[in-house]
Image 1 (cartoon, rainbow, N blue to C red):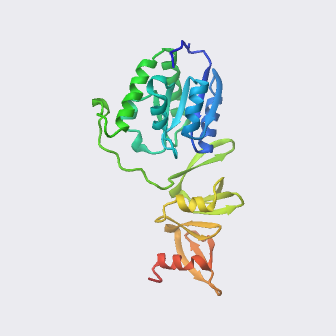
Image 2: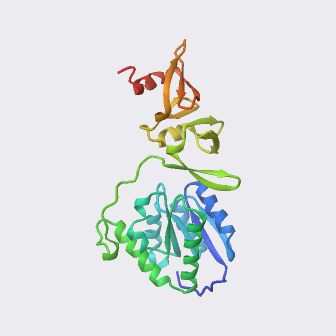
Image 3: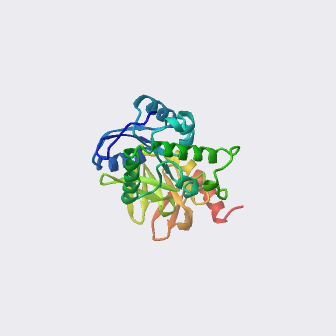
Length: 279
């Protein structure tokens, strides 16, 4: 993509790439507050991102690193550093925000990020684009691709200890509250209940709604921390205080604080096994 002169006041076209709808919504909301934005488009996976970059040639891309299928780094590899727009990486895991990210692209954002951190990254991107500094940015993208390839030598400035593997389990939720998207850490959730096509997170007496099925949540939450005790209930295990058995095979879990939750007969054995009541 050829460099084009963009002054600080010139309107920017922006592409937001993230497989989580609420994460895309949050970035769109933040961008809409910024002056000088010509357009904001979104892509929900790496394939759509590649198509959008090639077809629309945005000035700036917010690029999620961890996506199913093609990752953010796969997008950069396929487009090529020389053809990539200015790029701000977005990551849910601190271990990705190592030294290599500090020297790659324009900037990086670690989820959950606050408004001030977003504004800092966006201002840096606007300055880089206005200064036509794309040559240096592309060198940085190339450096991070080399770090991501275990067979390629690492630039001296990017060498670092191998980060610990990312947790395969869900560590935070993005919830919408009064038009703003806010993070809720999984370890803060007391229990989760089904509400039609949605799920309700119960945190310290407050309820937040997310668009996820109970089956998906059961698969994505750490089984050492959460258990599905009913087709419509998932509970955080370290809050369990007692299990009350009922005639017919059902049961009731009593949580610290007094909340009582139904346990189905098909799941009572798993609960009793976790409690050490049966081998």
